[in-house]
Image (tube, rainbow, N blue to C red; front, side, top):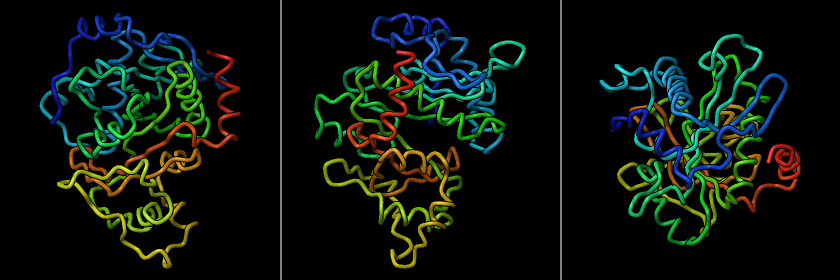
Length: 289
């Protein structure tokens, strides 16, 4: 259930709090005319929410609440405590609303007030993972979206430049979050889901199971019947990008009827990221942090 978003003054007050990212407003990456940074004011967050609305609701057909229809923004109570990574195309004339072409929502474990938990905990047993790994700094990645004409490898790499700069600054040790297949019938994605189940499952140290009431098996096709090339070809680019970095997949899929998706849980300890990507993104991060 969506909750009424905080007003501009509330967002502004939280952004001004000393616990928020010291990277707010700073450029974290650049590729040609594209730049990525952390939102540093309520208006930018509202523009990012409008982009999310355009992608999730208008383009992909998520179910709209009354507030969503009135506001024409995708928003919830987590937005006020999260950092918002935003991508701009500086070659576009006009204001910020025209230039902002992509966004990612970032929530660190030290942003959570006592007794509160991450967004993904509504689908997966995140609390159990946190209890097994006390003292680690977790980062939840979510609400990723990019304008259709910017859905390219270059934009994805720029987003990861920004994320890696952010991780370096905040000493993130584990990244995680839900990634989605379009549609609410897991069997329609039997091949890629089964590939993830058989080949990419998290080991016992990092495994996280879907909540029992939401659990849908990903073991749909026997391993011997899976063509890996076909499975990877039919997988969403975001999930393939996570796998390249060394991510693992949690136990079970979850159907999100509001957003019209079938979700899987991504778990990525920073120590598992391959040296190839550490060197690549680390070199870029050194330029901006």
